[in-house]
Image 1 (cartoon, helix red, strand yellow):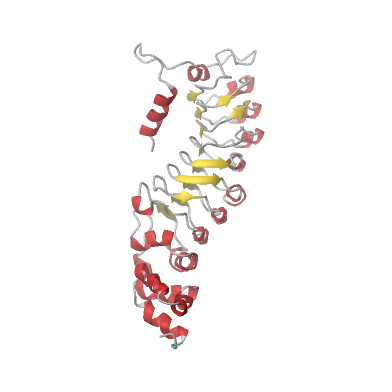
Image 2 (spheres, helix red, strand yellow; image 1 turned 30 degrees about the vertical axis):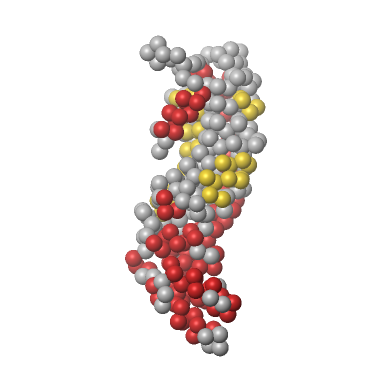
Length: 312
């Protein structure tokens, strides 16, 4: 077989399903050189993939799972040839993707509006290439094992993002990145061990924001006065952090605010309101300990477990 032309070797192995074909590249260095390239990926997929039957909108089929584990050249051909017009990917709690990486080739899906990969056991980092998804409005990657940073390309490229949920991962950097996304309505970064986390003054530009969850993010520093510009904010969750300083008087302009959690911030108490702050509810309720039916206030651990239990 080593004497056969490359095109013939590729043609022979193209009849083997893509889930198995690459295993044969181990037979010899010659076969490896023939199969480990985009030309073979194109031919192999052409034989076995019916473009009309592909749907990633719900539970992924075999090829959808393979997309996450194939070598990069296979991933790129599959995305470019068969998925480019995809509008939405919604895979939630899918164990078939456990311990896989988000394919950088997902950047080829330039029409993508919704990407939801929560509770899938994904690991590795958030690819910077996702910043090429300029039409993306919804990005849910919560409840995985993602680490590293929130790539700055999300802010520069995904300018239409309205719903960003990255909670319950192991992200440590890039906390500031989402605050440049001016169309955001929902931002959830909770339960990530960020090394540096302070709310930037640019949060005042997020005047469409309705829900902000930064619980257990190692958040520190003061609340910026620009938070008073978030006149559509309904939910503010900042518990289990190290926020300090005064609660600025500008925050009484948050007339849409209905639910607040400030608990377990040692530097924030019922006396932290800036002088002249008169509209203290519901912020005051969010600072006071929770007492239900005479039961002692729940502990930090119990609060966290409850939040996990009621996760999406």
